Amino acid sequence: MKTAIATQRSSQMDDTRLEKRREPAVVLPRREPPAQAPELTDIVKTAVRIIAGSQPGEVARAARIIGVSEPTIYRWRRAGNMLDARGAEVLRVHELTGLPVELLLRG
Image 1 (cartoon, rainbow, N blue to C red):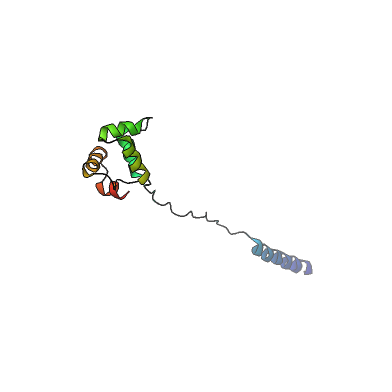
Image 2: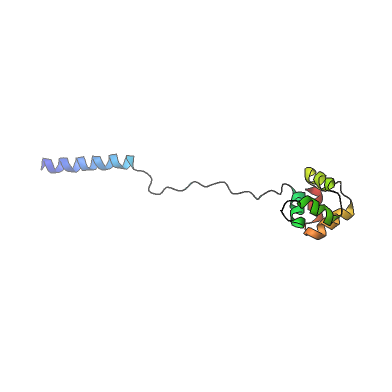
């Protein structure tokens, strides 16, 4: 009888020891922070690629299509917007690309 009680107690003690050491049953995966919307970094570069493609010589081709000089395109690209452009140039780029005028000016 004593052995039966002793084995019951030892098995209960083993159970309590196991309970303390158990890992959580369900491990939830870490949540990654929500992906932020991509920022439009250079609208002029995007507009040039829409107008002239992404092959070599795109700036020269875009300048010819828009009707401005290559240095003007490079100046717009460096600025990231068309704030210093004339209204007709902005409208021409808007017509060719479909990008909103506000976006071209704001960058």
